[in-house]
Image 1 (cartoon, rainbow, N blue to C red):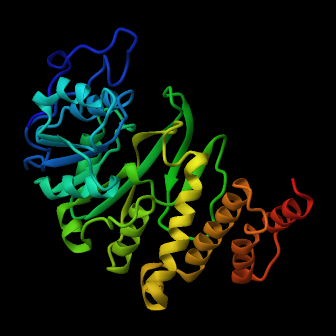
Image 2 (image 1 turned 180 degrees about the vertical axis):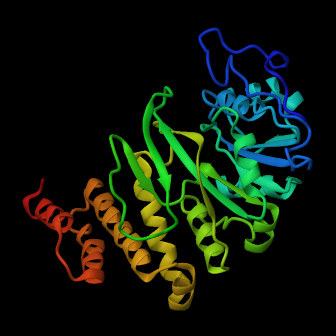
Length: 332
C-alpha cells in the first residue's frame, strides 16, 4: 500500500497541529535514486489501552509518504477507545486484530508472523515516528540486517525530555554529553530489521514481558549479527504514567532479568553477553533494583539479600551500597 496523503486521512482533533496532525512527509517516487523499487516495510504496533496516544502513533506511520507500506496493529483486547481509533483508520491498515493475548512479546510475534515486508520494525502505540524518516532510513538497510538510530524522549504531553544516542552493549562508558543528552545501549523503537534477521534469530521470547527486546538483541549478537548505527533520530519515545519504563514499574525489568539470566547457565551467559564485564554490570544493577523494590514494599531486611549478592559480584563498596545499607540500619 502506498501511504495516504494528509487530505485523505480523517481530520485531526481541533487542538492538534504540527506533525503528524497537520503536517505530512513528502510523497516518495515509486523507485529510489538507483532505479530500484523501494522495499516493502512492515510496521507492527502492539497495543493495549493506549487510546489517548494510538492515533498519533498511527498517523506517524501512515503519513511517511512511503510507496510500499504494510501496517499491522495487534491490540490485546483494549477496553478503552483504542478500537474506535483503529477503526477510524482501518482503510489504510493492512491488518488489525483486537483480542486478549499473552503479553506484549506475544502480540509482536503475532504481527511478525503476518509481516511480508523485507524490512520490519515494531512501534509501540505510545511512540511516534519522526517526519519523513523512512526515506532517510531505508537506504541504510541495503546490505544490513539490523540498523539502530537515535531516539528522542518526551513526556506524556509530547514535551522534550532527553535525547539518546545508541551504542551496542559496550561497558561503563555511559556519560552525560551535554544538557539532557545521554548515551543509551539499544533504543528499541529506533531499531529496524530485515526479514532475514528474524529468520536467523527467531521470534521474541514470550516468557519474558520486560526484557524480551534485550534478550533478542543478545541472541542476535551471539549469532554474530552486528547492528549498523546511524546518526538519524528515528522516533519520539513517550514516558508516561502507564509506561513500563516509569519508575513505579522499572523494578520489574530488574526482577525479571535477575530471575532469567542465571537460568541461562554459564555457557549460555557467556555466549549471549558480548563481554563478561557488561553482563556483570547489568546483573549488579538488577540486584540493586531488587533491593530497592523490597525496601519500598516494607521488607527492609529482605532487601539486604540482593544487595549482598550484588556486592559479592564486585567485592567493592561504593556509594550506592553504603546508601542502601545505612537506609536499612537507620530505618529511613
